[in-house]
Image 1: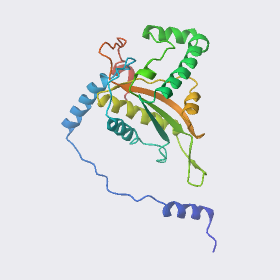
Image 2: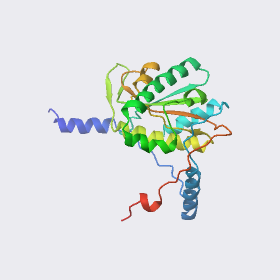
Image 3: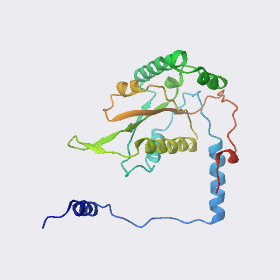
Image 4: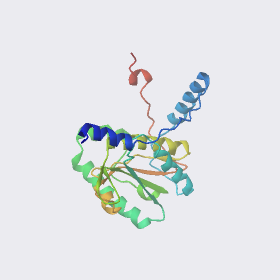
Length: 237
C-alpha cells in the first residue's frame, strides 16, 4: 500500500533524526549564579569600540579560539550560516585593497548618502570616512552571512533565519574578543559588496560586518559615553 505524503514526511524526519544525548549541565548555586552575572556585566561594561590599534602581534591560536567561540552560537535549524575570513597583517596588499575600497564607499556616504540628521548624530563621536585601522590592526575578521548552503553535488541547502543567526554569532565574537583582553570595532561600510569581490567569496555569501582587532595603542582614546540605565532598557511584567 502506498504511504501518504504526510506519513512519508514524518517517516523521513524520524529516519534522519539527530541522536539526542544527555545534557552535560553543571548546576551552580544561586549565589554563584548571581556573582557570575555581576562579574560578567562588569567585564563587558568595560568594552569599548576602539579605533586606534597598536602593531603588537597576537598569537594565532587566540584568533582560532575566538572563531570557535563565535561558532557556538545558536542558528536556525542548526545550519550555522556563517563564514569568518581572517586576514593578518602580513597580507599588506590585500589590506590596502580593503582599506581603499572601504574608504571610497565611506567617502561617498559621508559626502552624499547620509542625511544631515545622521551626520549630526555621528559628529560628537568624531568619526569620518578615513579608516586607517583597516591597515593598522594586526587582524581583520570579515564575517559573511550564507544565504544558503551548498552540498557536495553543488545543490542549494536551505538556511533559516540567517541574519538573526549571524547577528548572535557576531555578538558572541565581540564578547570573546573583549574577554581575551583585545579590542575591536564593528565596521559596516555600505555597500559592502567590495569585500566579497576582493576576498573572492562565493555567490551564497554576503558580507555582514568587518571587525579589526588587536591591542589598543598606549595613547588610544574613546568617546566619553554613558549607557542607558536598566530602567530605560528593561520592561518587566
